[in-house]
Length: 345
Image (cartoon, rainbow, N blue to C red; front, side):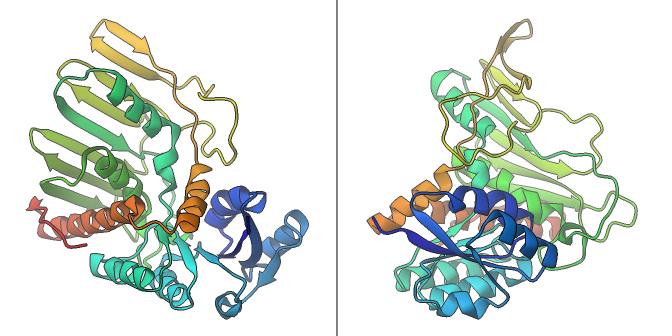
């Protein structure tokens, strides 16, 4: 079976921690290029990942006929243009989130991918987190009754505004663009598109230039999802909470390990994090938290490319996430709850 030749464009945190590890030793991929101009990162790549070639311009990867897949792990401002160029050069594409600003742009890129018979995939790796996998399993195996509420949060304590892109006034910066894609993806994968949405963005920290806190509510029929993130949580509540008329579940803290790039014989974390199913205020049950399966992202991508799939659920989720986030910003600007309308694919 022919290996897929890969070019990784960008080698910041995402390239280093989320893309190189699962791809470099994968039996179905060969990483040919990494694009970066940072000298310390170049030295690291040469030491740790020889014989990967370091390139300084995007054109090298685009024009190389050997390259099958381009992974875009750059700053957000070039996600749209770099994705479009890669598809125009008949490459398969993985692009980091946040993907693009508008549903219109996202749909255009997916239509181009379809026209050129290539797969475009947004890197929604958090769908493979152990805690969300645990929740999916619980919803299949336990009777929660009628669901009343779902909470998903990314609360941290990071009180100092720094020079990272997330804190600067640049395209798609801020906590909303950084973390909302994960939380929205969880909600729509579990429950589909809501009927209404409300969202508010805040600048809580001293000297904040962009939002560092958001609160979003997705309204379903007799059920609501509360999604949010902030940077000043000294005593954070549950990472996830699911409440029904017959049972509730709460999980605290972030998965340990954060990412699992290689398949193991272990199925559950040994983190000791609080994970409780409650039937009454006095009837509680410890629930083992599943180990993440992040390696499945690139395993699945390879299979889908090889099989030339016609239906791509990942595409639909990615489009739904962009649409919901776009509507959330409209809600924030109008300072009111707005309806979610049907959208065209």
